[in-house]
Each structure stands twice: as structure tokens, then as C-alpha cells.
Image (cartoon, rainbow, N blue to C red; front, top):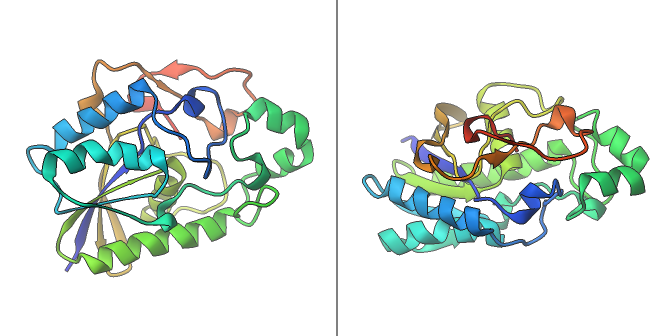
Length: 230
């Protein structure tokens, strides 16, 4: 039987605003992120999931907790749902990476699947980890609906897999904080039912844009949530 996954990127953190490679650094939500998490819980109140999973990092768990409080579901965590490990640059601002690791930065911005920042995961290894984790969750809960709170990079891997896109190249999918993405898993197949739904976030501050194709820009900008990346 197919499993319906409700995939959600964590709410906003200060690192999102500062153009930091958040990676596996354990940062909490900021005030906007907590507001987004509450809106998510309110949106799902009419049709709650059967089960609740998240990455074990704080920003994902904090996004999931209002849903857990509302539904009484026990939150299960899996380290396999973490963001990509960026090694020595985890937690660093883009400008500082460009200054301190210029050669590694140049290689990384070619967006090759087998390239990794020093001490980090390649995109190919990251893809294998997160798709494996999501398939395990889906197989364990066949025929159920499962809310999974995770990270932007994880959702990029899901989008590429469902759309049969290459792991090479910059991110193209919109992945807003606390947006709702519905994916059906049936055997090996991943089918996108809905993507980047942010109707529940109306009226909250616009989201910071993370555009991998233009990371050399000197400062972050804010755009409407429907256009936010990363």
C-alpha cells in the first residue's frame, strides 16, 4: 500500500537570514520560525497526520512540536533525515567560506554530485542517506499519512528523485520554510502530489531567498514566501 508523506522544511532560523551553511549545526528557530510552526499546526488541524517524524536537529523538532501538542502524537526522530553535512564550513557565512576556503568554494559551486566540501558529504552520498531514510519511514507505515519535518537539502533530493532530475546542477525547486509538500511513496516510486504550499503562512514576514545559482551576491534578500528557495 502507498504511504503519503507530508514533507515540511523546518521553520526559519537566524542562520537562514545570515546566509550561513546551517548543515548539521544544531540551531533553534527564531521568532518567525516559531510563528510558522504554529501556523503549520493550525493548517493541519482539520486533517492531522497519522504519525509524526522529524530530523533530530532542534530546528526540525521545534517545528514539529506544535503539531505533536495539538494531535497528541509522539514525535519520532531519525538522524538520517538531517541536512547535508558540509564538514568544516558547517555554520559559516557564505562570505567567510569564500574568503577562507576559496578553492573548495569554487569546486562546490560547480554543483557536481560527487563533490563534497572538506570533511562533508557529497550530494550523491547525501541523496542515498535521505532517500533511504524516507523509504524506511514509508515502508514502516504503509497505507498511513506521515508528517516528516526535515530540511531544505532533503527536500531538494526528494524533488530531484520524483522528477527524475540529475543530482548535478543547482537547486531549482522552491523550498520555503514551513511549506507543505505532499509526496506519495509506492514501492520505489515517489510521486509529488503538491509542492511548496504556503497558504497557511500568509501575513508572516517574507522569507529569505536561497538561490544556489547566485550565491556570490553580497547580501541576502527577502522575497514573497512562494518564491523562497533553500
